[in-house]
Length: 72
Image (cartoon, rainbow, N blue to C red; front, top):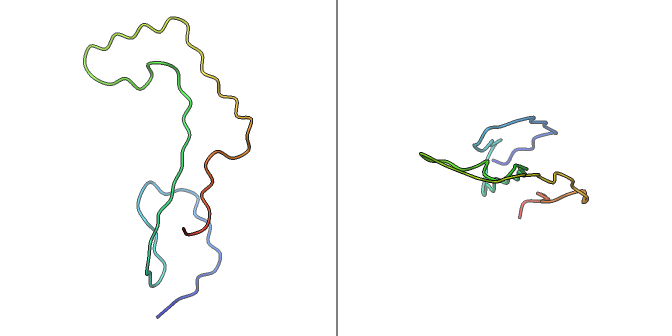
């Protein structure tokens, strides 16, 4: 039996899917943006990264990078 759910505000979820009532098709969507310097995501044993002078440009001139809209 279909259900109608009113407005809901969810501030944060760390993974997973929230389901209200009956569901025919679930399509979880997410986006993220990370700014980090050179060599910051290196993992492993005995890493030697020589970056010299490193600068990360965090300026974002556009309003939206990855829009998540609709249910498609």
